[in-house]
Image 1: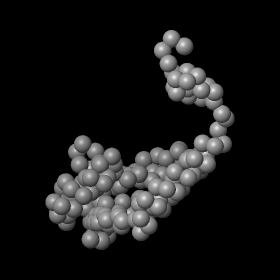
Image 2: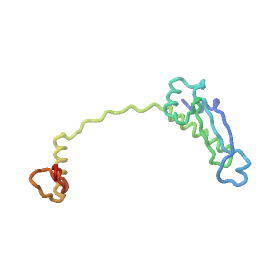
Image 3: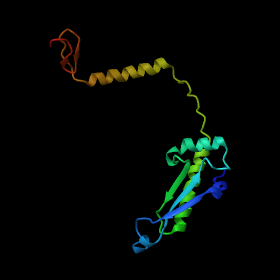
Image 4: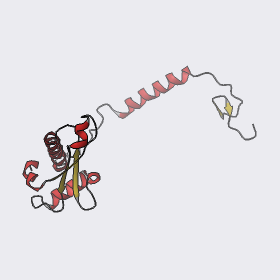
Length: 150
């Protein structure tokens, strides 16, 4: 589904925006909030509504309204266009069906050969460690005895 078909159901609200612009920022409402009622949409199927709720749940209010805010630009028109672009991207991504997971292929080399390589590497690394004196109890670990009472 093309998100541009939903543009008729969009509502906009403007407010004063912070940031650069000097005195102009204090006088003009350039920040734009795009509001889209997901639950009240006549153009979306129930499955599409569920996908949007799943993907964009944190952006949707308790009333079921998707909100996109843009206040970066100094012009209300540019902020409105940016909000619409962001809305289109969000809805398009939310409605894209998830990719099916591919099964992992079995190892091409036989498992025993791989395990032997792992053993060789472990022995090589063990040979690099410092020698630890053995008390005869076999419970020494990095120079500390694990036997009780020692």
